[in-house]
Image (cartoon, rainbow, N blue to C red; front, side, top):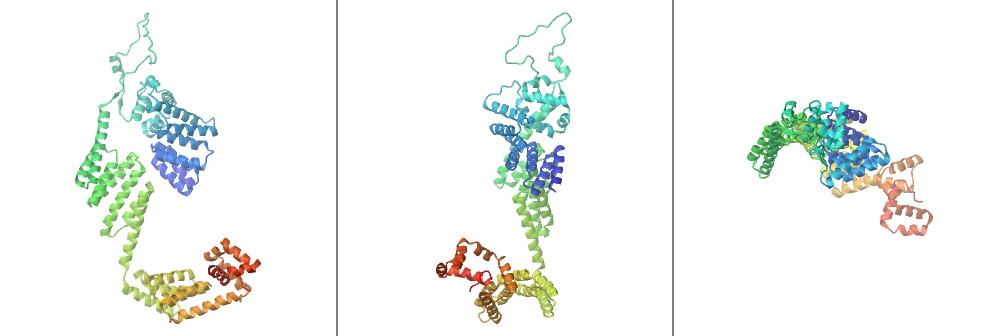
Length: 577
């Protein structure tokens, strides 16, 4: 199953569906949590979404699981590079190269990390103002994520150009006329860039071929500068407007957050709505407005915004955590509505969907709370003490007729109608004892005592089960506890007598070989007996009883030690002669 989930993750990654790939890899990790390849793959998927903190966590886990695997350090270096931890990235790539000195990916990564580290320590030396856009693995990640440039990556000449620009950003000047490079730069800078047309180039004074027979004079070279300077690239009006719109949207979001904190919900709604109008590419505006509607009790509006956020988030391939947050918020609204509708199933289903996006502890708690609320509601609707008493009487009649399975059915129905009736638990415990279902009988007897500690029948039921399980010392304790509440109860007194007889019989060793073997095997499963036998002090005591009589006499003066010795004697582990 883990391999199948891994294969689906690999397929999604290859198709550029990185959020989906993460879901599949996470599923595989849950099934096989020690598989280092799964963490490596998920780290790559996180890095492709620029979620470098998560990528780093998975890369570190990969190194922990497989420290001698070179690719683990490639993942680690890429994550550090994405977080601008350049020195850490250099260190990671170097460690990988110690394992695999000829690994080209590690060599390339090390070069990127060293170049980035050098730029971070001083002013940029690149003559290209856009050099940073081509640094590190982020460049390839962004080009892969965009459908247009992803197709260009299948063209070797384009890949070669991008590699040359990455090695030396000044080489960008050599390829500005290639529309593919311009499109790539547009993607990397996240702006719309318009390249000059051939007519505009001529109008701007692009030199034409010199007349025949005349040689054009060459300009004097300028040290440190390229001979040929490109025309400056223009950011289109649409690009400037888009950036301004996004900035205004973020400002409106901040104003909405401030109003929300002040409980000024009406103004918060206005600001979030304005942010949505300015920028429909950020679903957090929708989820924030949904949170306000939730606080206002406008659950329908909250759900509509959450649905829009999920739909838009899938279109934009937004962070799966954001989609999960929208589903969680919708589930919370559905829980609020369920208090009137009495239907928790839609909320539970919504929380479950949110957990498939992101296994958030808060979402998990909300789902569990909704399931508990559903169960409690069903119990309340089913509660009927009168019908419970009728079912218990039917069970009593079946018990008298020795039809114990049918009696259990009626007692169970009685408890569904009234789960706080100690008599029904006591009666069902008696049925289980007759049927030989001793663990079930013991559980019911203990529940009976829990509901009514003064009810003597609970102690007789529990003591009887323990007696049949040949736990005579425990049965004796139970019967004595019952006598504290009903000192003259004959069933409890008889139980004490029978238990004492069996304990004395064990002390004398009056058991056949088979009986003794059976008692010893059962005793060895008792945690209390196991603790006594593994106690170093008791081990020495038992040795002294066999080899050092004077020390044994000293041990017998200690009541705690003697109590443990008696338990071992009653269990048939130790025989006194």
